[in-house]
Amino acid sequence: MRRTKISIVVLTFEDMAKGLSKKTGPYLDVSAEHWANGYIYAASLKGYIKGNADGYFQPGMGITHAEVITALLRTIGYNYFAISEMIIC
Image: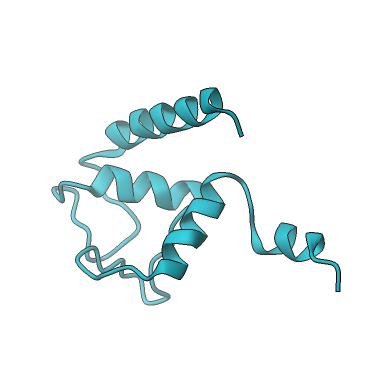
């Protein structure tokens, strides 16, 4: 990925997040008034992050290194199936 592309992705994502702020997102514990609501909603719509199966995001909870790496890989287009197909056993 080139610097140009990441710049476009980041700014496009920022615009999307601004457009989604003050809208009710998919998580029961993230209100429309939450300061990061638009970003959480946009990242969720893009598939970069996921909440719990019970419908909660837990915005104040810490994040593991594995979760950070997973989110970053998703933002650049990798997924489990694409990665597993590249691994030669």
